[in-house]
Length: 60
Ligand SMILES: [Zn+2]
Image 1 (tube, rainbow, N blue to C red):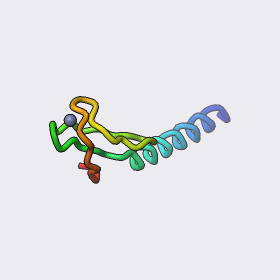
Image 2 (image 1 turned 45 degrees about the vertical axis):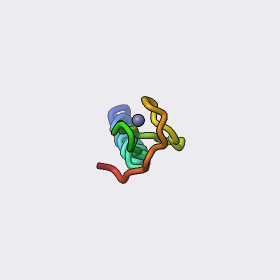
Image 3 (image 1 turned 180 degrees about the vertical axis):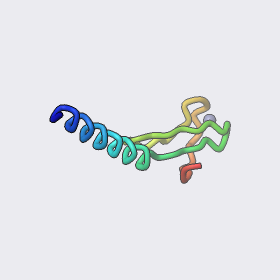
Image 4 (image 1 turned 90 degrees about the horizontal axis):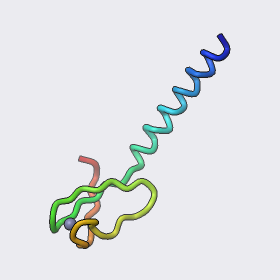
């Protein structure tokens, strides 16, 4: 019984942390080729495909 409760609590905490990390994810779009990137903790400066400077966007 205690193990089930612990598993439920861990699951809820995990889901909460996942949602927080998704919401803090930064969205970028390449103005040159249209490639979209989402970056979690570091700033993306340049497109992986064409190397153009990225524009920051707000979600979709
Ligand atoms: Zn690009």
